[in-house]
Length: 316
Ligand code: AVJ
Image 1 (cartoon, rainbow, N blue to C red):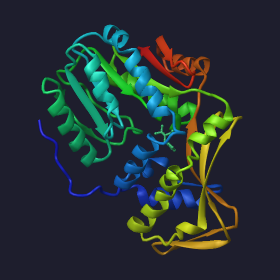
Image 2 (image 1 turned 45 degrees about the vertical axis):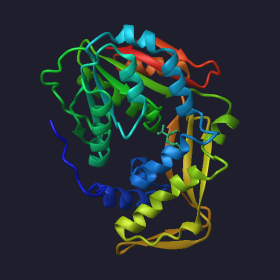
Image 3 (image 1 turned 180 degrees about the vertical axis):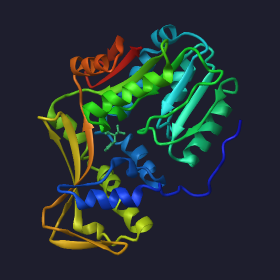
Image 4 (image 1 turned 45 degrees about the horizontal axis):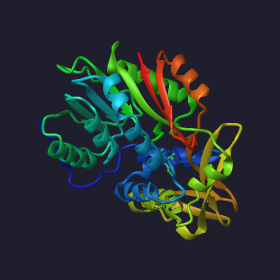
């Protein structure tokens, strides 16, 4: 089994259409999945290290604390499927914790990420079979599993589920049930609701890494779609929307201006925002209910000592 490499992080075909559509609606918006080109992914890794962003650190520590429990819940010869695998390190901790895991199935839109993560896992876990799938995990993925019929687990860490609205999240979970089958399970990390100061600090880090990550969307439009955004004329903002229980990130136009993308003009009033990301936060009660609506049973959940982050083991 070999992975094909592509030389460049290619621009997904839907990028231009999504940008034009998003900037033509009111209020303006851009899909957050376009944050993650190579530079954006590097910035995200940097975010994971800033002191205000507790998510990655807390989840890694919690995964470590529960590894023996996970190993006995999941059992031997597991097939681990990871949507949006990226270049993550968490999968290595999980594979380390499990008894003779059989197969790793990373799913990612980026062929480069798939290639590198496959190489890395191959080297560190020579006994684990790797079956990479290139695709957008926000679409339903059709994979029949081939010989990998039993003990399939979807691993979805990092509170990535927070990027979906609750109805989308429910739909996503339903699609994962199709991937893992009747005896499968989903191991998922979900960020908890917490005092607003703590939440907002995590998305307004003092080093400005999150601001750069947000603005990278504009850089991508400039570089890949022939846009002429003036990066200094937009500023990053992130705040908690309590009624929706989500952090929202926006880019705010600092003045009245118009921007050209390819041949199209888009005008901005002073203070007008582009909504770039939602990051939903759930209480245990609300997430459990959502999982149940999707047809899952919450067999077990864990929370770190500070009450910042939750991990769920959901069975079909
Ligand atoms: C990768 C979606 C979990 O929402 O916390 C981090 C992305 N955005 N800082 C999150 C993100 C701004 C992150 N997720």
